[in-house]
Image (cartoon, rainbow, N blue to C red; front, side):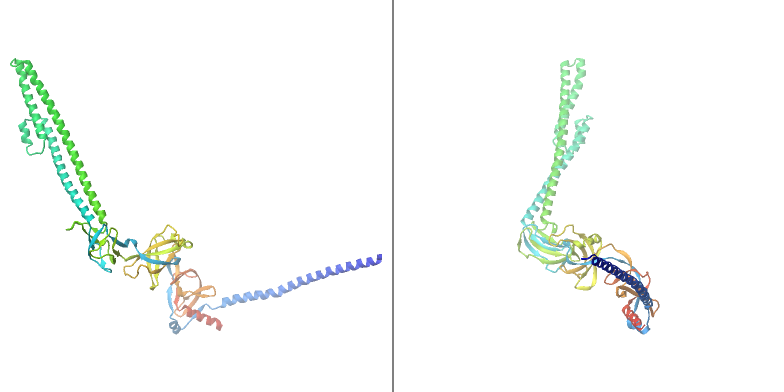
Length: 493
């Protein structure tokens, strides 16, 4: 290849590169110019569109004026906005059941023979009414033991009274003997008073001491005068001392024995009282809480009584039947108060804290238009292994006998603490797209749309969190009619 040919080719490449760069620059310049003029022409159009939409919203009518005839046709009713307690609740399924404390199956306390059945199924009874009369050998033995203990107690009481009186009289006698009265004076003073064997022992010893003392007193001057020998006088003094010692011994022994006998009698009395109390307690436990414990003609006969007011649901035995201990006799129930049991699953456990010590609303399919208040009784502490739920139990008043155990129910659980808030009737709330609004009465025939923010809604009312004030007059009935009139005005415009 020649040198000239190579130079020509190099020149053509440079020219082509310059041309490509120039074309790119021209395209960029054209895009910038187009963007500038495009934005210049498009932006005014966009601003004009937004301005038109705002003006259209501002120009949308919010007032409705209708004739008296239309007011009557629409059935318009106006109510004030009020402050009311509202609370977020959740509805869960529940079951109505017996209150366990008000339903009981009364059973035979001991092996017995049925005498008379005084009631029939469905019969109303009050507390203390006779249900069934029975007889049992074990009960007869228990009552016989009570009688024996009562006899033992009477004997122990007599013995105690004797020992107490003897002890007290002995103490008085010993105090009197300290003054060294004559034996005859002592006998007169304690005539007819109980002293038992202590009377003979003490008075005999005391008489010997008195005689020895008297002889010793006479022997002393006679010995000094030489009438009796000195040895005889000394012997008389020794005899007095011996008699004094014997008397002191008898006195101390009598005092000890009287105190010992009194304490023994007190112990025997206490034991007799305790044995009687144990025998009575055994009889009470045999009979149970619903049996009449009064004694009857037959030692083994007793009656089962109604523990509370209620209805006899079932009688499980008949006259002349033999029943074993623990066998059902009568089932009695009081359904004036029932339990409503609901299962609260884990995702609703926040309701458990709010439900404590509160009332819940109960509804039943049989009475769809009514709600009933039930007071929360307790919330279970354990999660059921089968349902994985915690039980909530409320007390339901049933004085009118509207409910029956086993009925299905709905319970509205409080999910949060109650609060005070503005509310309007639920029918007052109207909606357009995502906007909620109500109609406020400016006059008898003039109504104004007001947008509001709605909070909690119940079956009857809606909470209003913004847009209204307490006392505002809102349309509760006929609001939909006003909404239709407002839409017609918008279409006409």
